[in-house]
Every structure is written in structure tokens, then in C-alpha cells.
Image (cartoon, rainbow, N blue to C red):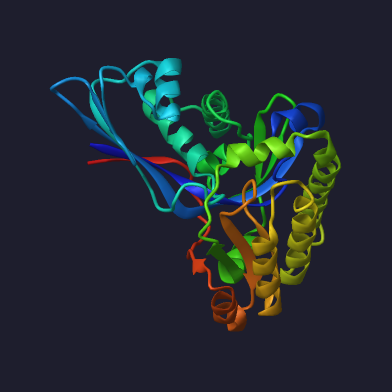
Length: 313
């Protein structure tokens, strides 16, 4: 038996610019972190033959290429069936939370189906992205924290391939100390909402988001940033993001306002929008007040310095 696990992520800046419709013309800058919440893919040999795939459903199969779970079936189509086995998919969080769970699964699947190949993180992330984009509307960013781990600035070229640059250590400490992750209790299919990001009227907002990500990178690697600078930048990118159709609604806007009124310094909705999770920066003395005022569920987290990994038993 072995378990492959890949970390989920919190994306702070640049989201939306990782869609091919944008980066193929403009490139992309993404600032995000891997967190200690995971997607797991468990593999057990099956000497009796065939395949058993378990997630929210159970599938008995002669080939994984016939699986209804599209990431697994596409992985098998691209790389071939492994030896007969039982595969189990488990996540620390519900799907549709904006934490990149489907992309983390694609990274796990690539590592399983190509288990004899130890490619560079950038190659692995790009290959996992190619798997997922064949079956759903997704961007190129979420596979990166799942493979690289840590807290990085990613530069995505027009070919969709990325390089990573770790942020200064004091920023990791800052996020670990002041970061607050709240689940709205509303999950949503990200690929549907991302369709609105492709419309021409969204291009201006995406240019603004891209510019803010680049500006933020210069601040962090130049004069540095404190908690108030980071919070202000998060608020600015959220206000740019909310201009894109389908990202927010009156309930989400109210949640944001309540959190700020209760003491949150700044924040943004994660993922494509429409629900999922909020990320806020909050002073320790205001933390519980923000949680109580919003009535939302906290997901405790820390930055995970490691990317996808495999454990054998």
C-alpha cells in the first residue's frame, strides 16, 4: 500500500491570469502558498485483477480509462493503466472550496501513473495541468503549490510553464501568524464560474490583477512588506476580482464587510469565486471576534514547505 498526498493552496495574487486565454498573450504572475491540508490518493495492489475506484462513488472497472471520475480516466488514457489495484480518493476539505483540490488530485494522479519518473517540479505541474485541462476548465496555477510546496511567486510563461521563487521567510511567518481561512459553507463548480473570466469585459480586471501581482512581488523582494501593506494589497485585488461576473453576490459581500468591521485587516475570496473560502489577515486579539461575527467555519492551516510526496506501508 502507498499513499500519495499533495497539499492544497491559498492563492493571494494573480488569480485568473493563469487561464490560457490570458497567459498565452500576457504571461502570468501568481503568488500562492501550499498549506497543510491535502488531497490523498491511496493505492493498493489487487491480485484478483480489475480496478476498484472509491471516492464519493464506488466504481468496479476492467480499465481505469472507463472511469466516470474524469481526472482518473484521463490519466489512464494519457499514461496507461497501472497494474490491477484499488484506488481511493480522500480530501481534507469538501470540493469546491477554492483551495485547488482537483488540481492537487491531478498532481497525485500524475505521480501515480508516472511513478518511475522523478521529473522536476515544473515538469510535473505542467503535466498535471495538461491532464486536468482536458476534462475541465482550469488555470495553470493550482498544480504549482501542489508540486513545489512552500510560499512562492510563480512566473508563468506564454507556453504555460512556470518558474518559482520563494518569498522571504518573514512573509511565511506573517501568514502563519495572522492568516485566517474561513469556509463559506457554499461550494461551487469552479469551471462554470471561470467561463465568465474569459469574456472580453473581464480583460481589464485581469490586467489590473496581473499588475498588482507584479507590483506586490517588487515590494516583497525590494523594500519588504508588513502586515498592513499586505492587507491593503489583498483588499485591492479583491475589489478588482469582484468586478468579474459571477465572482461575488450580496451574501458574500456582506460576509466580507462583517469581517472587516469585526477587525480583519484585509482579505479576499479564494479560487474562481461564487463561494468556497475567504482568506483574511487578522490580528490575534481580533481573530475570534471575526470568526464569531461572520459565523463561518475556520479551517486552521500553516504553510507547508513540501509539495507532493509518497508514503509506502
